[in-house]
Amino acid sequence: MKKNKLIKFVLLILAITLVTSCSKMYQVFETSSADTKLERDSYLFENADIKISYNFWADAGQVSFVLTNKLDSSIYIDWDKSHLITKG
Image (cartoon, rainbow, N blue to C red; front, side, top):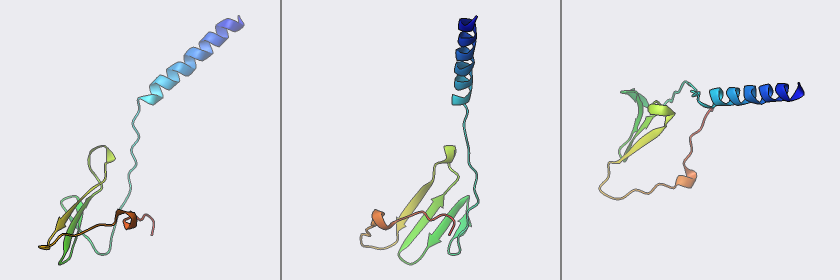
């Protein structure tokens, strides 16, 4: 009798694991910035040197950005000093 209950319990746990492991989770958030403008579902920052387009709504929640150098010379980005700041 105890073996039967154990088998049912293991099957129940296995079934729950299989069902929940296939589900997708999405997180929706609101974005804003004082020095950017919204253009075609992307935020755009632009000055005389560079144009940066941020897309927070790509497929599967991927965040992407495009940097456009507006100068005739090379620009260098220190990725160690580049951050996405949330909540202030």
